[in-house]
Amino acid sequence: MRFAAVLLTLVFSAAAFSAEDTDGPRYTASGSLMMPANYREWIFLSSGLGMTYGPNAPAPDAPQRFDNVFVNRTAYQSFQKTGIWPDKTVFVLEIRASQSKGSINQAGHFQTGVAAIEAEVKDGGKWTFFGFGAGDSAKEAKPFPRTERCYTCHAQNGAVDNTFVQFYPTLLPVAKAKGTFKDPEPK
Amino acid sequence: MRFAAVLLTLVFSAAAFSAEDTDGPRYTASGSLMMPANYREWIFLSSGLGMTYGPNAPAPDAPQRFDNVFVNRTAYQSFQKTGIWPDKTVFVLEIRASQSKGSINQAGHFQTGVAAIEAEVKDGGKWTFFGFGAGDSAKEAKPFPRTERCYTCHAQNGAVDNTFVQFYPTLLPVAKAKGTFKDPEPK
Image (cartoon, rainbow over all chains, first blue to last red; front, side, top):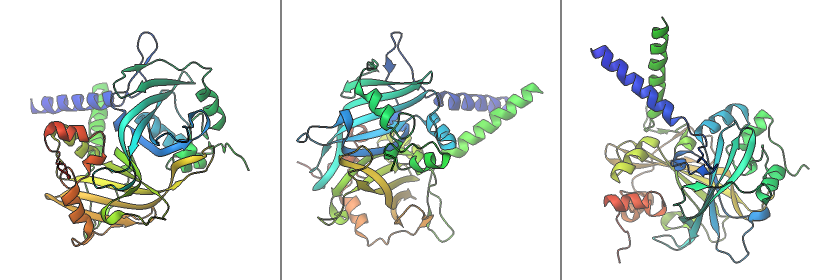
């Protein structure tokens, strides 16, 4: 009886572990990407402030925003071993407002509310971008049309397979070691 | 036989899951904190750039640095339910250099190499700070003496139990909902 109870516990533990492990993309019937509920518990890749490049360049006088990049744990673990992104990779780009004076902080910038959330998903060997729009209440996102500049910019300038690994300091050495790093500005 | 193999798999899965779950502090025999090998897989709380407060204020003309804050998963899950930090909470403060021009980036800042790593650990109901120093190769850190200003600054100004939850946008509403948020500047 005690053995059966232990066995049952093990079965449920293993099942729970397995369920947490399915962190790939989920879609609505109409093909929208469902917001990954727990992306803040995924792997943090890096954060920038006021980054200015390609189609995402902010206006010179716009307030500076932070961009936090997360990737699902399963894809991250695969990348650590191979230097490439497996199918069902999900990147979440979380854009947050910044504030300078607040509490005891006097200068520099810290993060405040969500301004927008976007996602980049590899599925069926193909990358697709999704925009959840402003705020953090959106629950699903339609794909950006393939004519949007994000597609060409990522394809041309992403150091590894449509992703900006050149800006993710912990992944950059992995990609270089695995030989998958493509310098977008060869010297 | 097949059942036995399945059982064995379950046992090992459960054991592996359990091992990953022990993310509390580990010490050397002399009381130094051992570097948590996988803190980059912990929960990311926030990142700031050039934050200027108390004893950590940088010189006005110093290059701006990012500070990434991570907390161990077990403590984070407990905080989500209670709004307080359990014993064996480990915060890692990772300080990184910033760069403005690089690859296709023209302005703003992105993160580059590690400048220093520090930790704040709650153990036996008491918080202790540790400094791993420059670079990312340090494997252990001695505790900062209790006369260091980090102790008084965190105790006086941390919104929740010696921690700066006022700067962690996803934890702030949790602490407010649980009634554990202490405004360091009451109005």
